[in-house]
Image (cartoon, rainbow, N blue to C red; front, side):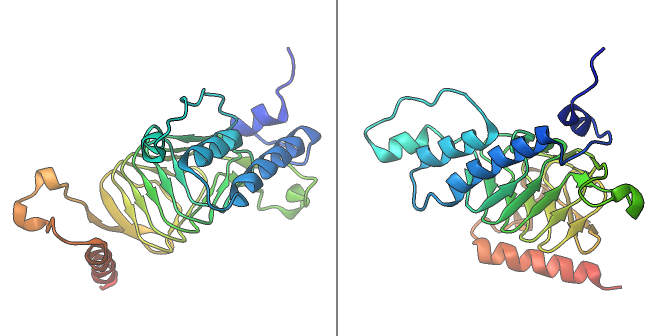
Length: 239
């Protein structure tokens, strides 16, 4: 029976050697693909999707181009919206649902699978770290020692604020809101607002369908929503 490759060990969460020739080559390919997107400048929706698929090595056929730019862009409504720059190790270990949005500066250490559900919104400079190292410096041994990782799974309809960090092994349920600057070290059940370092539950979220009309102001703009979120976090942090 053949021994597992370093990538197979990595994806299983076993000890692996990141600086093996096999994995260096894969990271180099991903870096070049990310640079193509990051340095593309002002581009069409079609080209954004094409460059993103190149990062992920997704060979799904592109639909035929349409003459009307808006109609052509509409063909990609369910594809991710990725605002460059974006940074990741491998690209192929990131699994996205439909209509996911990443603001600029997001980082993915995708040693293990990082999955993000449909319609999830991710703020600027958010980071997702599925890789980890030994606490023992002799085992860690710079670039010569083994490392490991744990998968990260994020549900549908989440809102992840700017500068949030999600650590290895975390599962985030559907509809979760994570306040800006939070460090998520533990899994979060569906429909909760969390914030802080480490992130902790501030309150349970009530969906519009489950609340009275007075509980939600449908005319409020994004500034109001952000102010409400800040107030919830502030009040939740008080004793």
